[in-house]
Image (tube, helix red, strand yellow):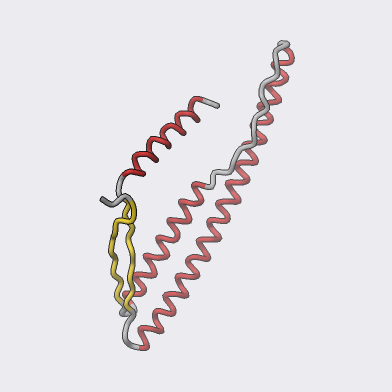
Length: 148
């Protein structure tokens, strides 16, 4: 295992330990609908727009995941090509063959981040629409873990 990979794992473990001990907060949203029929009809349009936003976001995330898979396949081919070059070099020098590289894994973390960003934007747009229709949106933050 390369030293850089070991260092990454060590940093992740230390950060996980530090973050695991601190309080974790979550923001909750409550909605109070408007009283009139026009306002409630407006909310139906907000919900429809939010659903379209989410579907569009899912399409973007799926494209991101496909791209990550393609990039991983290209990286795997690159690793194999480099391996074959090394193999020829080692064979000419009478040395033992290098270790066959493993397949590259897709980096879905970037896509997961995009999915969270899309969901956050869809929610923010929905909340604004909800308020513009005459409804009320309230946010409360509560400690949900490691609360002392």
